[in-house]
Length: 138
Image (cartoon, rainbow, N blue to C red):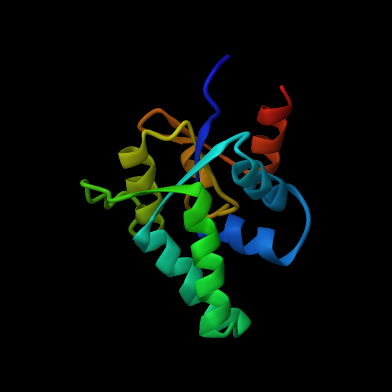
């Protein structure tokens, strides 16, 4: 039996999964259940926390509970390499750094401006949540 795929999820995938049903939620639930594995980093978790507080007015206690839950099923890596691939949105580079450090099989993103147009980064496919759901079905 082959290993479950290791995924790095962009912040938008996690946020969308929290707020609505659909492919993003399916991807997160697949990671939670162990059918796939999720890798993240402190920088990516901090971005999730910041977006939830700023854009969605989550209270600190709500954010803490979510981050604990994510950490309970994610591999948290400490990227050794600094990447400057995406100048227009430096935060997107943290996704790439995490994927390199984790040896991810896929980067899953809804970012149509910077990440998805890469197609792949250092051999790691960058795909949408819908594409990931399709991959897992096959």
